[in-house]
Image: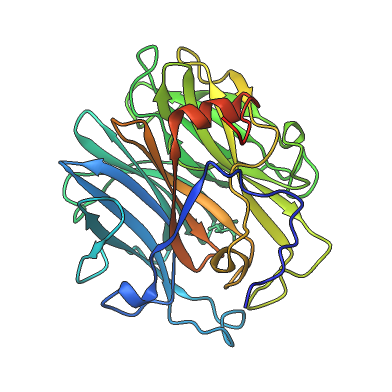
Length: 332
Ligand code: BMA
């Protein structure tokens, strides 16, 4: 059965959706919701760190929060994944409740993991480094509340840079979160924090925005995805009452100063329009977390769909650049 699509936009036709590349059926340990993965090319393979929410069912998930761990998978082609026998990262102690929504960036041969950490005293954004996806060394944690951090893949003007989404409570209307950047000389101390994109600049959102996948470098600028939330008047297909649609957006930041936007697509890049995106734990959620540019110019975009499965969409860098400058026409 094809579900009704309640969205006013459609995914542009140059995006080829592959569908889910990882679901709970692929996981050799307790797993229910597989989504919001970070993906990178590392030591000649594609690597993925994915979020696994488990110990939950459709009936009970709102009475009892699921458990969360991060699983690890490798691939030769970025499409078929081999999942490691055990989960790789789960932290829980008196203060830390869980880590989730990882994003991966390789810098100078090391793999950095940005993650969200729920603690008893608020939500923190963290950066860790790993060489083997077995041991993770945490390099920095933000003050609460902050999350959705992504790192640029190289130093810019001699500084590491990240995009992030602090959650302003007092100075802003409810759930009006924006996208910011910070810089660091060493991955530990972060400062020079600047506002990059406000939710008012995104025409198709009436709620919050936040970074998506780590940016990729093109000759024209840094291509960055972000998520943008629209509260809908209709109930979306979900395991529970849910009306927040998440779209994938696209912007281009200046190469020498990525706090400056040089182009922005006025329509969403990824719109939930397939059954596996429309229906699930939280229907109509698209959450980009990984983007890989191949030497051929092909770009692979990985995203969580409906907070239930991990998906892949493929397109071409040239088409993304046309789209971000609002020059894409279906007939090109
Ligand atoms: C956000 C985060 C994401 C999730 C999204 C939609 O606030 O919790 O992990 O994918 O909501 O539920």
